[in-house]
Structures are given as C-alpha cells and as structure tokens.
Image 1 (spheres, rainbow, N blue to C red):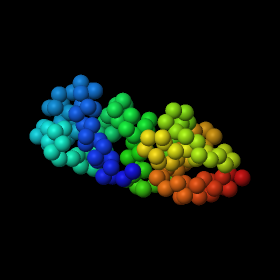
Image 2: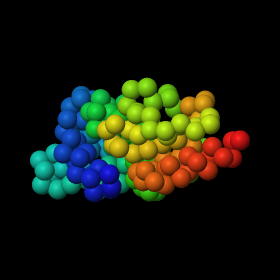
Image 3: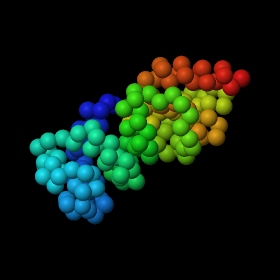
Image 4: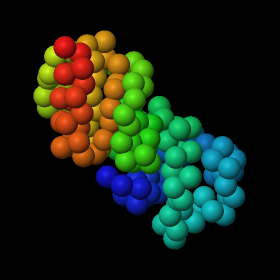
Length: 152
C-alpha cells in the first residue's frame, strides 16, 4: 500500500465516514479544515483528497468503523508506516493483534505479524509493545532476527 492507494481508498469513502459520524457537509469540512466546496468535490468523485486531508481524516476519525474496515484496527499505524516507509523504534502498547493480525514468525520474545487488511508487517515483543512496522516482508524478517539476537 502506498500514499496514492490510501488517497484513492479514503477519498471514495469520505461521504460514508461523514454520514457514519452524523456530520453535515459544513461540519465535516470545518473539522477537516477544508472548504465545503472541496468536500463536495471529493464526495462526488470529481477530485481526490490530498495526502494531508487523508492523514487528518484517519487521525480525527480513527474510531470509524468504515476506516477500520479499510485499514484494520490501527489506521494511524498504517498512515505512519506509509509516510515513513517503515517504523523502527519502540512505539508503545498494542492489543496484541488478536483480530486484524496474522502471526508470520516468532523468534525469542518477538513475533512478526501481518495486518490482514493493509498487509503491512509489525514486530511486537512479549508485552505487546510495537518495535517495528513496514510493508517490506524481507526487511521485517531481517529486523526480527536482529531484535531476537539482541534479546539473547
């Protein structure tokens, strides 16, 4: 998944996200910091949201069932991973990936998981803290080995 795919995906669902929240076009435009005219153009498919608007949408509506169905339970992690191409620092507690994640490999106290919707990878430790995220499986496997060796 890349920025353009996210823009395509979320631009086409903007109206559904707005109606799910019960917002008028005026309120949604105000929340996103865009003009009502721009919102109408996006909702009618005449233009697409910008990357900045997509990031704002995911951040401000991260509890949206529609966004969750598109990106999984961690939409901000998907956005962050796409923006930076990978994340390679401990990033805090997760829920452990029981619903939206498939375990790929386990080494020592670490496990590599793949999100079943966005297809990105992450490494969690035994406490469900996230250490790494990437869309590149080979890089994720390499980092898993490095982390596991460091834990020995």
